[in-house]
Amino acid sequence: MKIKVLILLIILASSCSNVRKKTFNNNGKIYYEEILAIKFMGTITTQPYAVMEKSFWSFPDEHVYLRIRNNDFIKEVKNLKDNSFDKFNEYNYAFIVKDDESVDTLYSDNTLKSWIYKKNKKEYYYYDEEGKIAENLRSTYSFFKDCW
Image (cartoon, rainbow, N blue to C red; front, side, top):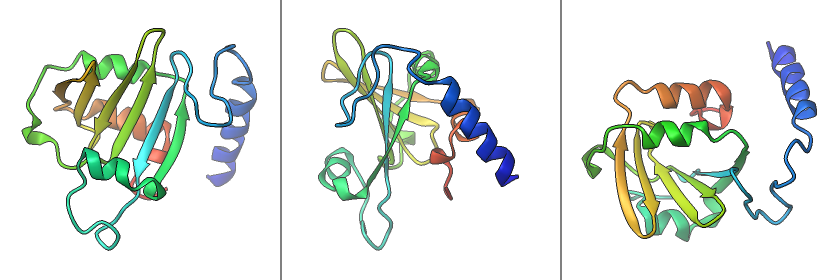
């Protein structure tokens, strides 16, 4: 199983080489239509209280990063029915999205079913009742699984 995954990763890496002119550079800047996913790794022993937006950004040593070139799931989140903040647990993931005019932030909790989209200092709340977005992200990237 591990050999199959390794072979798949090698094929994927070789097929993705410089398809776009605009990509991430070495210092983490984000360019067009790519996403920087940030996972907060704090646990109950390192973070004994709920992680809200301010505390999420206050502990950069607790962050791990993933660069995502396929941003289709962002459209899927935005197509979800608007919801309220009530179903959102804690800030576990941040997705930094840059387009030609702005940089937007999308947050999710550990379920990847509750979402907060921030654009122009406004917040929009979404909830994926069926969990299809979470399922797709976890099947595509081990980064989003509990044990990776």
